[in-house]
Image (tube, rainbow, N blue to C red; front, side, top):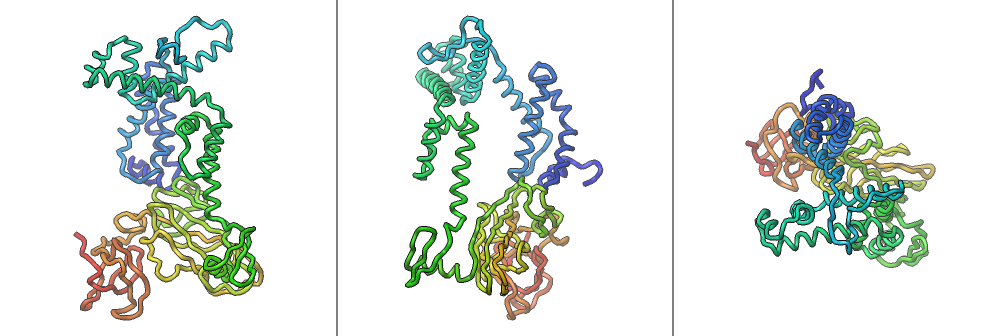
Length: 467
């Protein structure tokens, strides 16, 4: 970057994994944002500083979620304004009754004499105000105007441009939501986790009451995440050692499988490969391995550097038996929205890998990986790594790695091939939307250079001129 980078350059650098870029953003704006927060809060500098830190935390996460264009300065001010409004909702201490005594939400009462009771009352007040702030705006407006300001439903309806009956419904739903949130906080964690387990086993969504509790309880939220990870791990791990029992029968762990499924499993084992587990690293995660590819900015991603937006790294560890390795071994699948971008050098035994025929880089989400013929003197574990990328404008190449000359054509045929010479041997595949530069023409053929800097010939009918 230049000595004084622009906001756009800083955002792009941070999305490429440069952590110092966000430090520069923080240094550039935090003083102005704190001044703005103090004007909104009318509070001491410490509160304004906390609000800005929360806004910056949200900004650091949001910038890595996608790569949409952002006008940084007004966007940061909006985030700070929202955080300041949240702080105002949390710290508002007006004492008023939110509901009838039957709902247990009466906030007024004598001052507690014991510290424990005072603490409990303050905690209850803070939680109820937080629940109130979380209500939909129209429900919150109707409830506060009804309970605090004492307006009639006719007056509230006039303010909201609706009917008195609709006003009553809004107040009722707001009261119900507050009671449900209070009940969710005090729900028994054991019962909630039992419901989460049943829902997990039955592959359905847990009850609304359980999900409300999860939103408030960090321990139950972690429990639910662990359930999801267990399912993902089970889906990508081979269930157990394969034992061949003869007559087309295979034993997987303690289960005996026969017929076509057994034949398929036997075919996998015949290759001498056993899958041990897949790991997926997304935007914002530290890269588990150094990456050298035109699909990443600057052409290189250091190990431990944050993975940029729109990019993912998929790794599969396999165990190879001693002997010959000559057939296809595994399939790697990119996360939703991304496509196969590059295949990295495997780690472990000295083996080479390549795509199986039919894999179109930048077009397909899954790729079959082929091990080059080799002979292993002993069993070995190998980790195969694939880079995935969300195509932009039909290209999976990072903008700063694309050819300097603008592409003149784009591929429109999904089955287009790249040939060594007109009508000669096919040397590769092209994908729909892939940018190419036409260098020469010969009848119905065009000599092209692709966005990945591959050269060859393609049929003219497979191309369309760019504007």
